[in-house]
Image 1 (cartoon, rainbow, N blue to C red):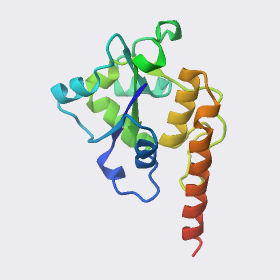
Image 2 (cartoon, rainbow, N blue to C red):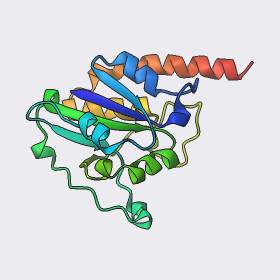
Image 3 (tube, rainbow, N blue to C red):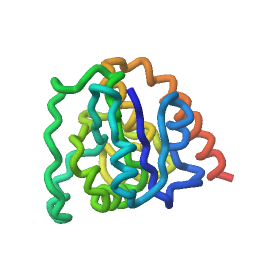
Image 4 (cartoon, rainbow, N blue to C red):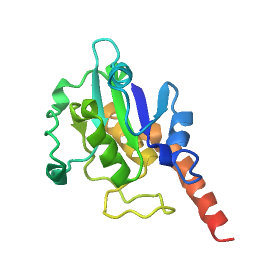
Length: 175
């Protein structure tokens, strides 16, 4: 599986950010920074592996109707290719920034979406979640990969290491 992380520019250099940790931890992943991407450049980034498919990790968002976004194509899990032929696209930013990235990049709107359901509470105690089920980029991606690869154990060490990162950040904040 290939992973493309599109990071909002205001998230770059954030000590509490999880996208860089994710990119460094998963071989073959790619991190690109931007809010609005040139259409040709984004089209090239969104090319799936040969015979594969590109999917956007993004929740079901009925409020997108207020932004007048077209409904994304339905994702039929039965049509997902083997994991090695999948390109998973992840938007890294606050919820507001990620929605803006989606709004400003019509090619992202055309991708079928993978929404996570029944996710555990966030381990990311150093940032505030506004709703249940809101996870860090690293957590959401790990849960998506577990779901797509049908292998929960593979990404548990990364989540455990993330717990250590969060604990370290909390210790710094308490000084």
